[in-house]
Image 1 (cartoon, rainbow, N blue to C red):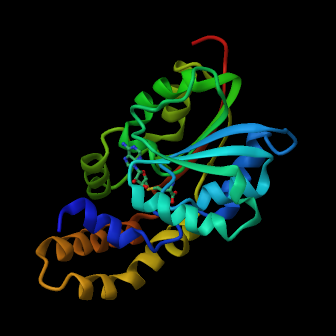
Image 2: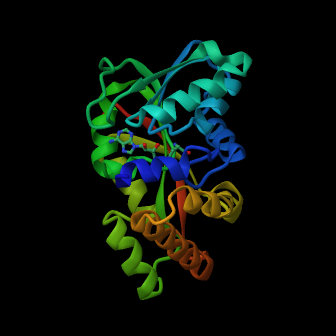
Image 3: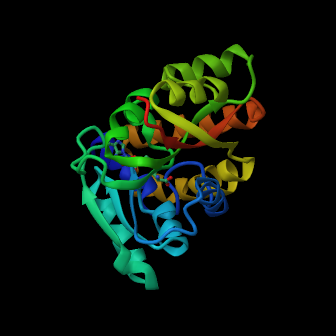
Length: 252
Ligand code: SAH
């Protein structure tokens, strides 16, 4: 089985495919000032099985386009959304985040939790800006250093995984440089990692390994995740995801 299919198998039954929480999605909605507005058009990019998409649909008067490049995640999103009254407001689209087909200035908000790193934060905020209406909102979560210094082991691991990992101050500077006015930042709390992501994943490992018995790549995937979890456990005060909320400004 190829590596992508293994990743899908490991994550498709999860509520979230990255660190996060419904309370944090609601907090970002609040900071974005979207709650009082009507007929919003929103994209949730790299939505996975749609945990944030469903919160947006519950909280907002909006048409939401949920985008991911893995069709199975979107099938699962649609299955879950169909069980909610808000189903009519969500549509899904299989698309890559580097080739989005939205019209220029057509979106009131772009949402993306734990996914923009696939494009790179700076490239993502630059390329997605054109899809936002003037004054539109960008709300993204992104791997973030919580301190100016950190242990070399942690630094090397995450830099190896994602060259753009940086502090909140640096991420906010990127947003300003790319034509946004930041209007909120908060780091994700530990429970977003443990209860929202790693804990449920660890509970899926036995069934995943049993389903892929004898598959060295599956065993290696679990070992890599266990390694990341142990690293988080040791160094949780140095690293998290930051949630960044910013408004498109007129100066690019
Ligand atoms: N937002 C979800 C999923 C985060 S995991 C959550 O917070 O739970 C990252 C997601 O990005 C995965 O669903 C993955 O399939 C998707 N993804 C990765 N690269 C992508 C690309 N190039 N285009 C679209 N989606 C992509």
